[in-house]
Length: 310
Length: 253
Image (cartoon, rainbow over all chains, first blue to last red):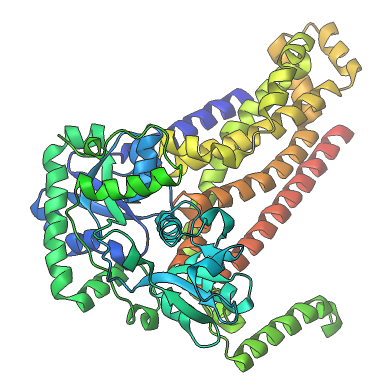
């Protein structure tokens, strides 16, 4: 009796595992991992407008909250959006990933992100940040690297600043409650942090940072991209077509975004999308490597050339 | 049944009403809090359109699979270690070294091996469930009445036969208690895994609602999780009572 039960249980376990591994990949089936942020609308447009189909791909969006590099490595995702520093770090720690398309491009004129100080914090100049508490969305992510570089450029020792982790949506609350003295934030949360009685001064750090920084990009494993060169090239081409659509029709793009991410309409209508670019060069990625090296974040990173398929 | 029966609900309801009022009066605007009435509406919506049930099934399926694998391996090894002094003595150091590893610490490894999905979560839950089931089964076997084992010897039962007809029935109540404790831990680990990386189930739905700037839905899932946790625990308690009851009858016969 009990042996029968065990045999059945083992069989059942086998079936369940079999089912879930079955859906891994047919030739042109791709899954793209992106966070639920409008900057990642291009693959969504490419799905809805049939650009992926045109290039022989059946694409699916997977909304992720992290773990993209590992998910690429395991084959759950064929393409994933990664912060450029996260890609550099994953490569530095031994994962073999390559860039399959550019994502966005920052510019010195950007005013959609920055450091907002708390009303009454008494922070007037960068030097006043010493010993203050600054909220950051994720320790070690690209906003913190940019902030630290900005402090370095301003002659402030960032080791003296207490960075604390808090998701963007909660930052205005922390600022208002006086839990932190400043937040490193981005739209649509920037405006909430700047509201009267909440925020005081805004430092638009982009103005002092290198121009043409690529904040995020799309990556695949080298193994997969080498075996599927045509699909990888088609992916980039489809995103480029989606970019043309996005440039011409922001409203339509946000409408498509809302099919994948259920944001409340009143927030959705106020969203903007920062400048996107599907091209990215090793030189642009090197700008990040330089900053990260100064912050002791890399061990044996060799060359940004290796991040691209030959 | 009078109004007095429901007096326990008074305090929570008053607190909720106070929260509703203070948020409305202060006119506070935040992406981190929501009106209790909005949370209630969100709760009705996720229950009504079935999304909450789908996510619940995703979480429970991963939990069940993990418990099945980790639990059964744990029970089998526990019986073995409980019966064999030598095996228990040789493995004790290894067990004490591996057991304290927090299950969430193996999330990155599980993700690298299995990727997103049920398998990765089940693997972590199997790891979680394995240790308590192993240790509690082992101690249950060790405390089986020596006389019962003597009986098996006198009857000249084979190893397998003595395990299935003497040891297993004797340890069943304690194994069930162990399972009930383990299910509670597995539930926490499942939700944590989903909150951290795995894009399925109730944990992910909750995180997604936060990232989609819909705090009312985030809290609706918190409430849903609280109810689900209560249902699981109560269900297991009932099950255990039933089975104990049945056993008592059997003994009397």
